[in-house]
Length: 367
Image 1 (cartoon, one colour):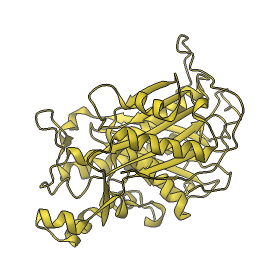
Image 2: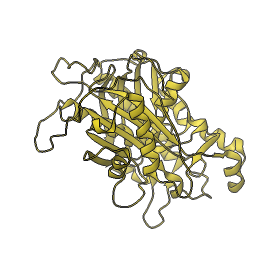
Image 3: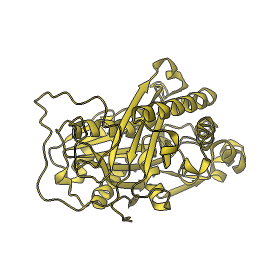
């Protein structure tokens, strides 16, 4: 079963030349934070650090749509019961033989096409996932091979639902340090293989899919400050023990932690960027649960329409959630060139983070 793929983002013209290389044998310390006010990535910040921006997005979703009616029938609850508690109406489930690496490669291929780049121009492939196909090897080398990115650095990022944001931080740092020019960041999950179908806390919530962000120094937009944090003392809120291999979640504690961490990291990254909440045009958070998004909007006193919500048709896709949401925002018209966008995520660990993007001013949407 082949995934549905799409690419949506400001399209950059293809550039000539091969990969810049990662120069892994040298050691250069990069500036701790990108410029406070993002500048076009063709230039450097006042501190002399080049900036990076997103030049392409891609999405890959399994074909199978699973309704609340189907899940509710097994759980003994109504469709409305699920929607009230999650905001989800349907979600995608991977086929029995569909692999995480397959979804990831499809999303990555779409992002490359959208940006007008060849896989040979990549310096690094980062795959954020909690559901790699095998214990070893990691997903990233397989995905890089499938894309035709021969010999590039290929690394998995393990940060649960914050994985794509953590990958974005890594990509930005490599580009700012001058050790890479183009980095492909992919979030991909087939979490439904690790869900107890009789668990009301997880079965209606989690879904499968992949989203990709192509990060480049040749961007018209820019990635601003990034904050990342963790609290291992809250690790038991969401876990999948090896003894069962199934996700377990304390819904109440997860809700409270998610709202708190998304709200505080939002304020922290805005302080680093020397911006206020009113300076942000759109807030794109990890699509964990519609009730969490509403609670964060209320905590920050934001109009609900400025907090993007696409969970109804997609469910919680964990590490894939942020790039998928950015693509959905662009497709819907909620995200426009020149906008200032705050992106935030929180996930098992607990781990969290946020960043401020200046969206590229090159118009266009690829499908």
